[in-house]
Image (tube, rainbow, N blue to C red; front, top):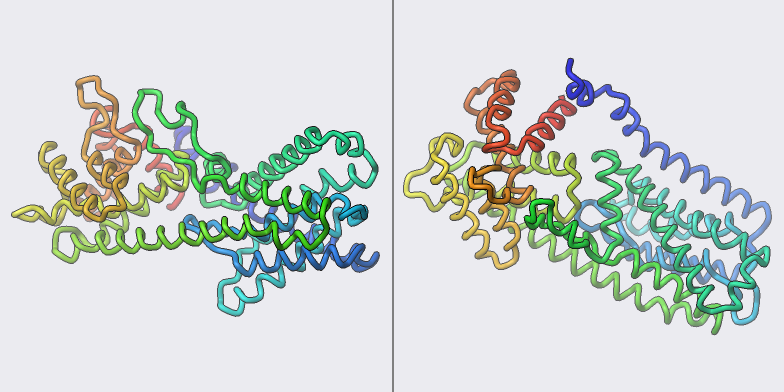
Length: 449
């Protein structure tokens, strides 16, 4: 067995360790919840009016929770309320005395209250989501509450700019902690790829070095769910500071920014739903017209997505990759003579490119999938064309390899011939196919058995 094959083996140590990381998150969240509720019940709730107001904000935010593409659950108002309670200083001259465990307990009870409507409708949140929320609130409170209660922040709070800098640092560290925990919970992808995706979701964009690859080509990468961490963090600090200066009555007023963020998320989710429905409808057309083998588009879409995950693509890139992979054969609808079985692998390169560009033109007619159309147009281009030009976008290279693999498996009609199929793909690597993509596909298939 080669070193590469050993790394791909399902029982490899890294794979086994990755399977337990989500369990670690759940256990830590459960321990934090039990300890916090038990300690708070034994000591009693300190300043119950504060706990009630912020608990209500968190519960309302959780009730309005939305699920975004990529199965990312988010409740910006609830997250901002939890952060504000953790960072709450004095309230209009009255010092806040609640500790770390009470913060976790209040957040946990409010999460439970806000989750009940979703449970009734059959949309209970994933346990990892609840654990993440508890751990993030506990982490922020651990950074702030002991220092505040012990007077360690008095010199800092006397200087407005220093206190503001400290709060920003706490929010940034909390966001990083939450990103690490989220990456641990997303065991369907390698940890590094999952962590990069979570960090992109907190960022407002990418640097030019990330936007353009080493060869100068546009990678097509974008900044995930732009600014989520910034919006939630700023709202949490604003709510905490306003309550400290003016009183608890300001909490509902300063929740408005988070409500606006929630509205934008709902619009985002609705737009993505329309896109997905458009893609599903278009991807079924070639098979319905007899221009493709049954299940080919779905298989290519799933495999391409898995390879993209292995290569570290972010959620926006993965979504566009899946869309393009599912619709990669739509150009065959414009042909006068259908390709036998829909298998384009044996066609001349020029004809493959023509079909790809015809498909891209059809997709552009939707008016909302121009980037996907660009990927489809490039999916027939070779990795190296012999003229020294830059390679096509990574998404196009992934589709080219995965499509060729599925076509070859279909032609052989023998799933056991995978070794021969990969021998052919590797023989053409560095020419027609990207070697890195070929090996990533091999690893994905090895893990899936």
